Image 1 (cartoon, rainbow, N blue to C red):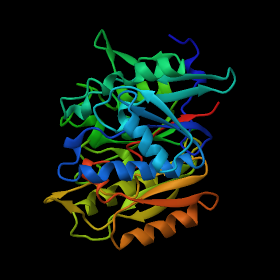
Image 2: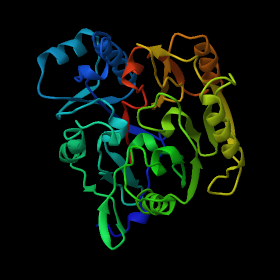
Image 3: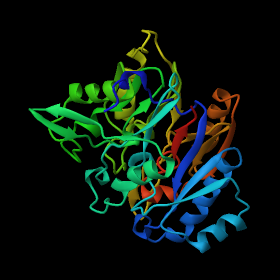
Length: 350
């Protein structure tokens, strides 16, 4: 165990990144009937990110056809890593990096992954961090908690929380405290707060209520509310009173307006409208502009071919004045119930 864990922290997404981890899409069952479009979307995302920073692309083995595709699309700045995966959603299955600026040390938090307590095929994904630890030569820590006299390893996904890098965290009760898709049996708020305090150096907890309709993770925060600076929060709002998300997102906004930072100050809240409801094969999908990714020099923002796209782009341009806003059409990718943030995992620079 690292003795001075309290000197480590997880940097916010807008802090300098060394690289980003992305996995190639192999699982055709995640996009039934639409899989043929998915590699192209992923290539577009890789292309946009790799223009200004390194992409560590996880592929099953040394596959010439994928490397050929990368070349054909004029993508440079890619580092290939051979790891077998079940799905592409590395935000949830991949490593959480924590750093100690004083000692110039970086560690991997190896939370357990169990397919969101929903899917059975997650064994490869649960081993990703071990492999990344070997590839990067970074030590990994398995977060644990002592509960009712026994030591328990913790199941956690990166999309279930969002941090501002200086002690505050956003979470939802629906994801972490519900009996549905329960990740850690009998855990309460105190248990989670203890874990985040110990391993991520978090002191200030903002618990929202519910996520959005169609989210198969049962309430991930990165579909609804995100920190965009230490003191600024972007949050999804639904303007149609008849929509199923209206009440829940309104309640979350109420909580955010009352919440304070780790320094006791009120946050600046930026409201971003939800896209019009999107159905694929009669299933409502969790489309949200909050599933964007912050790179070193740009924002990769999902769009969905709906009228709200332009409103969202405008809001992002107004806020991120020092970063380029680049969009990717995710109207088919979202059939896998995730978008750009779900499939990326940043590795911070020390």
